[in-house]
Image (cartoon, rainbow, N blue to C red; front, side):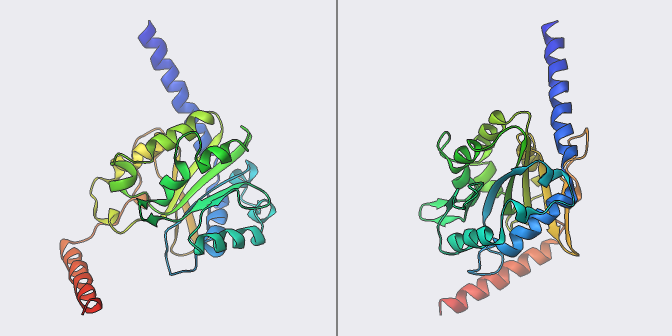
Length: 256
C-alpha cells in the first residue's frame, strides 16, 4: 500500500513538472534569449561563454507579446555586459536587482554555471532566490551547453546547485536554457543521458539562432526522449581528425 501511494505521488509530481514546462511559451523564451545575445553577450571576442539568471513575472515566460525591457532595461543589460566584459561577475548588480551573471574563470578553473550556483546556501543563485516568490519565473541561461566533463560528471558538477534551486521553488516556474552546443560536447554520442540529468532538476530548453531565434523543450512530453534539436548533429570521424589537425597546425604556428 505504501509503495502504491509513493507511485501515485511520483506520477502527480511528474504531471506537475510537466504542466510547468508546457506553460512556458517558446516564442516568449526566444525573445528573451535574443535580447541576451544582443545586449548582454560580452564583447571581448565572438561566442564567448557566459551564464545569466533572471527572475521575471511569469507573463515574461508565458506571453509571446511580453517585452523583457520592461523588467530588464537596455541600460541594465548593457551594464551587465560591461561587468562581464571586464571579467567580473554580477550579483544583483542592476537597479532592479533581478539578475546574476558570470563568465568562466581560469585560475582556479571554474565554469560560469558553477560560479552562479555555488557555494550552496550563499551562492549568487541563493541571493537571487531570496528576491523571488512562487509567482515569478526564473530563467537560467548558459550560452554554451553545460560541459559534461566539469558540469555534470565531475565532483564539482552543477546538479546539487540545480537541486537546491528546485527545492526552493518546487511549484514555481523554472527554466534552464542553453544555446550553442559546446565544441567538446559536439562529439558525444550519449549527451542525451547527461541532458536528462539537468532536466530531472529543472525543465531544459534549447534556443538556437539559425534562421531567427527558435526555442524548444528538450524532452518530449510524457517521455524521457531528448529531441534531436538539443543534441549534436552527427559528424564524421574524418571531420573530427581534420579539426584536430587544423588545431595542431594553428598551435604550432602560434608557438613558432
